[in-house]
Image (cartoon, rainbow, N blue to C red; front, side):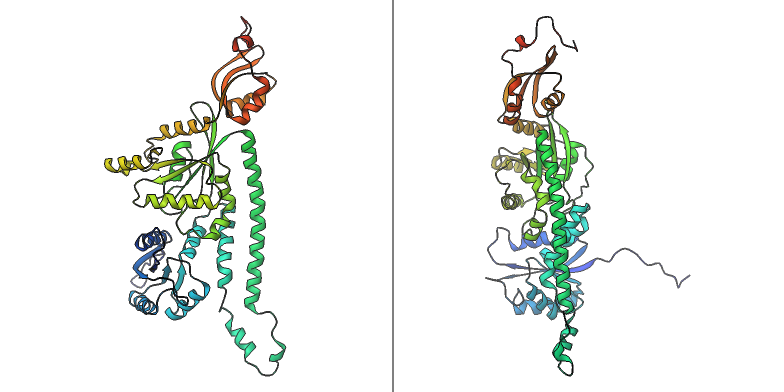
Length: 444
């Protein structure tokens, strides 16, 4: 039996070296950005063994970092037996190729964008999410296709008998053409899904249901908050980008109004532009919302930078004009003194702890108050034959008083501008006039 030793089948974690360049032009310090990169690497299953940084006025065109730092990196790769080197900023295809040549195989050279794309590829669960990630990955890979078929180029340039006829389309050109074709196919499919999502969104708009979107920095607790508010069973975990796919759940407020709450993909600083473009149909849920809840990890020391990063992405997708309420989540992890400072700097924010379920009643009250903003009070008599309109009154309006009389549903409601126009033909000046003396309607 000694010959048959059990071997572990657990995946071996890759050893990663992180590299950052401090250009002095970011709100985030190089150390803070590299700390976040380390969390991203750990989320993707890597073990960070070393972090390197360099202060430069501008990236070196050939290798992004200076010659001396490249030599230092090579020595650390060999001494620490590293498997992958991750740069905190996006590398150009030529910089990546040059670094791979200098560091040598089999060590991989990737950048922050490639790391995020890899995490997205693991966490995307729906069909649309996978298509969006695949599109972003192919857009990233296309300019980096190189070198795999260099032996064919060598044969073409070697000369000799028959070489003047050429060898047709090179394999590299074939690969690029196939990638471009796949990108076009994915875009068409995503456009089709976006149109379908638009129909669903229009249906929700026509139904008059008030729409709330949860946005925030990744790992701020949006999915946990959705689960707490609506009783949903959305996957939630203490890791970056735990959920990517939007989830919408219905919720009835105490006043009787029905709303929907949508959990969206988390944001991050240096979010790759191609990801924003690929996820535009998902982020359309934010643009179509009536109210945005900006969920903030109140216990995070970088929360102010994260708020600015989220607002920057909201501006990029054209959602900066939507009414927004800041939600200070993980309030149970914040000390008394820090709580006072937070409420002083964010007086309109709502503190909650989604994990413990505290503060959610106050948040729902605030949502109800925002939903009622701009609404008008009116008394209406809706005939019994207008069953759909009765349903809309209960779903779209705040019903303050209602009774069933001989002529139909007699109600005093608060309605938004659009619903008020719909109910205008059924307005009554005095409820007493609408209900004849002694008449109680069919339910009396």
